[in-house]
Image (cartoon, rainbow, N blue to C red; front, side, top):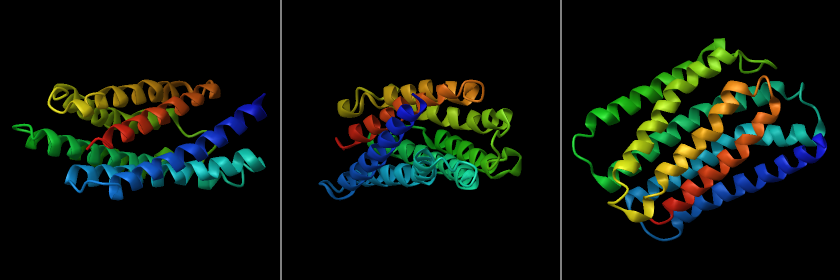
Length: 216
C-alpha cells in the first residue's frame, strides 16, 4: 500500500509541475500583455521552479528508495521552496495592487515586504536544520508565522475587492484553502507522516489560483 501511495504521489508531482510551468507559459505568452498578467506568469514560474527543487528529489526517492543519499538535496529543496513561496506571495500581492488599485495601500505593501524578509531570514538560519531527518518542529512553526500572515494579507486584499474584478473573485478562497491544507502538515506531519498527503490538495489549490489568473 505504501508503494502505491508513493507511485500516486510521484505521478501527481510530475503532473503538478508540468501544469504549473504550462500555466506560467500561457500567462506569459498566451495572449495579453498587461503588467498584472505578466506578473502572474512570473509568479507561476517561480512557484513551479521553486517546488521543483524539492519535488524532483522527492520523485527520485520514491523511485529509488535512496532517501538517506538524497537527504541533503531534499532538505535544501525544502529550503529553496520556502524562500520562493515568499516571492510567490509578494507577486500575488502586487497583482492585487495592480488590478484593484486600492487607496492607502503603501503601508500594507511595506508590511508584506517586511513579512517576506523576516520569513526568508528565518529560512536561512542554520537552526532550521533542513538536511536532518527530523528537523525541529518549532522552527517550522516560526518560519511559517510570517508566511501565514502574508497569505492572510493577500487573501484579505482579494476578498475585500472581490466585486471589482469578478474573474478574480475566487482568488481569496484558493489562498485560504491552500493554508487550510498546509497548516496541519506543519503542525502534525512529524507525528503522522500521512498528514503530508494534504500537500496534494494544497498543490491543487495553487493550480486553481494560477488558472484564475489566466483571466487577466
